[in-house]
Length: 241
Image (tube, rainbow, N blue to C red; front, side, top):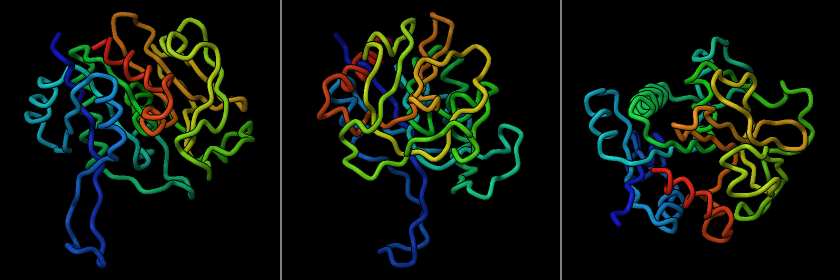
């Protein structure tokens, strides 16, 4: 059977003065995304950012599934808010690209896995909002920026039974954690399918069963090579493509 082609969005960074080539724009991702897709039986291809909508459409036509990766904060103007003092770096270019990429992929019902930023972007793109910093979330009482080994689960999540995530992990699992923002208002047409013990939203899914749209707040790509259950998440995603 022909393997599924999984597009992985790139992060955009500018080289610094002490780099070999200062002042250049670099598009890159962590290799763990590529390896997770390979181990799960898919063919990973990197999708570089562009503002050319014709090119984005051609990119979408090439793939069977889409992963939007972690990275910078989503511009709060996208969900009607002014910048919070603890807002981190934003990239207007990456926002413009990935919102367009997601919109085009969704219209053609391409299965989607959003990771960290990609989870938050999925929510905002469909009308949801974010806590610009988890200090805004009164119930937040666990550390969501771990200092330990990122390949190991750090805190527990509770998973709802009627969900794709439950089909992979069961009712609870331990995940890594590297985020200072979180979902505030869930987008219409989506449901919460996992929370941490302090109530932070860890996963959302599209209610429409004809469309596979899943966002997770943690970084499963880092755990996939050493944790068989986490690798099963990528296998499950690819099986939907």
